[in-house]
Length: 92
Image (cartoon, rainbow, N blue to C red; front, side, top):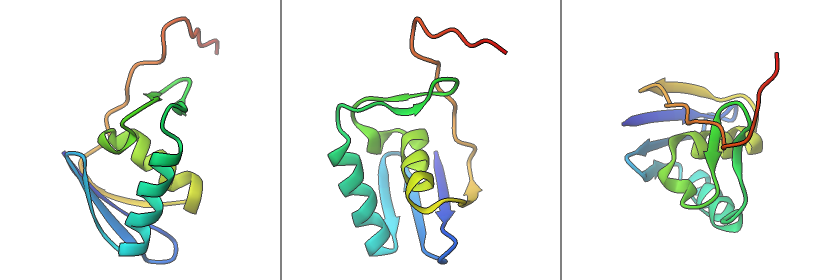
C-alpha cells in the first residue's frame, strides 16, 4: 500500500508499507509524534485505530498528520479502515 499526503503548506510525505519519505521536517514531526504517542490510542471510535506501532498503520499516520496540519490532500491507495475497538457500540 502506498499513499502521499500534502499539507496546505505544500509539504508532502509518502507512506509505503510502514516507511515514510518526503519533506524532511514533515517526516521528523510525524515520527516524533508517533513515538511520543506510543501507548495512546490514535484513531476514531467509529474507524478503529492503533495504540502502538503507529508508523505501521496508514490510518494512524494520516490521522496524526491531519491533527497537526488540518486538511490534507491525499493521492494513492485508499487508506483501509480498521475495526472499532471491542465493546464500542455506535449509535446513530
